[in-house]
Image 1 (cartoon, rainbow, N blue to C red):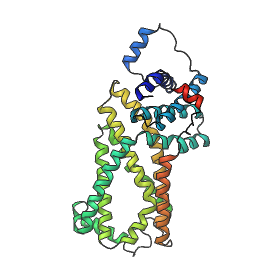
Image 2: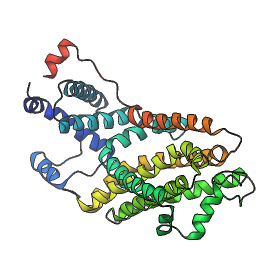
Image 3: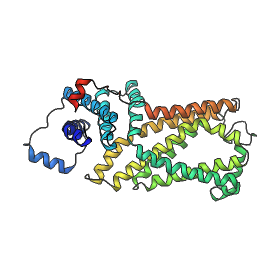
Image 4: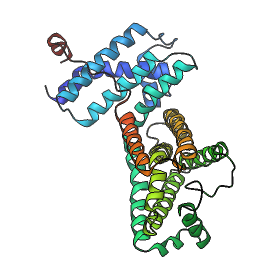
Length: 350
């Protein structure tokens, strides 16, 4: 079956599922659809959401998604089905409480699914962060004096002191007396950066682009400078573990900000306010996850990364495991189970 025929046969069912999800999630519908609906139907109260029908539509969409993936149909078709099944999954299996169960739903399903749904914003934010970081890192590695274009001479001296091995804790000059005080400082500092990258999207995305670039440039410059100055072991063993959560969270916050900016620049058939509200309702799940990752990063940085009693080899091993965990979690956690189409269902589905 050709993709066009597959879409023509099953498209009405997907439209029905999308309309049911919009109604359940109370999303603003575009004006043209509202006018068509008013013209086609007499005025009256909308039909109540039929849970059994919604569950049936969800199962059928899962079958169509499996068929679309197995037959390598066009990407836009597969992405639409992925979006519909993920939204339906969240709606059907969500629980109306705000305790441990809700937190579990957010961590295990909602957050990783939301990240994958915004994959193009995530790709753009990653490139904006990584490319200048690598370029600036190489420049400062081969010419440590290049750091003076980014930081003052006093800051460069402070970087040397922080990773020279003369301090009793790596990565900082200890002005605080306890690790708990440093933990509080890191939480506020990290969340401040994440907020800048996200909220900067309200300025048509320009603010997010600026803060992502700035953090990439600054991090790359410091890493290249310290590596070129010979602080390889102290610096990289310090950043490898908490960086898995902190750097990923900064990029995710930037991706959420770019989503807001894109909604303002290209609202489509919605008003800009409607498009912004819609984008914000989707991005807020990512923001919750970003806050959690930044708190984890702050705890690791305060109690683990700066500890001198831990061998660098151990930190490298734990850091590598953390990076693998983060990638696996965001890449695979919360995916709806694939439904193996039975012969009877395959005939029915098209």
